[in-house]
Image (cartoon, rainbow, N blue to C red; front, side, top):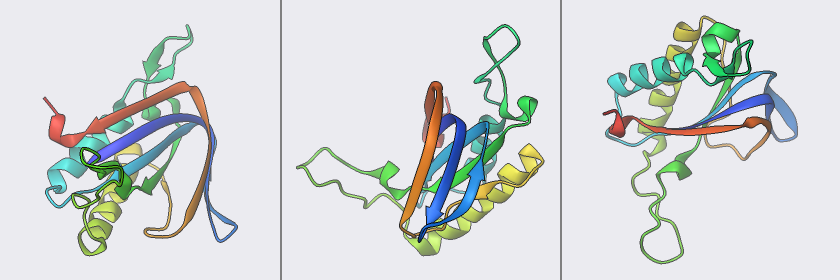
Length: 150
């Protein structure tokens, strides 16, 4: 699993002109899933994101986690995170899971985040043409790949 985590002052997801998810201070998480991903990846990545100390403390130092600050989150499925760009100019997405594999893993990840964070998580709609709007705070943007844990 690959995730791009962005600390945001606000974020929203629109589908067909309708806002389906919206948050204030928190994280926008773009999530890419591949066939080799499983429950261990889901649990590890969720815990890592919820406890990642990337929010400012009273002294302005990034020392607080999403959980500690009571922040919100939106998770958006993003198959393009698995783009292969070595050959030519047209990315290949062969490593990204097909919907029959990716959708259940995406849903399990969202459920795990809700358990770990202790609140409802916003989502996109898998496979939809989504318009994601955000105000990156910092900016703070972090990439995590569960295949590179060590």
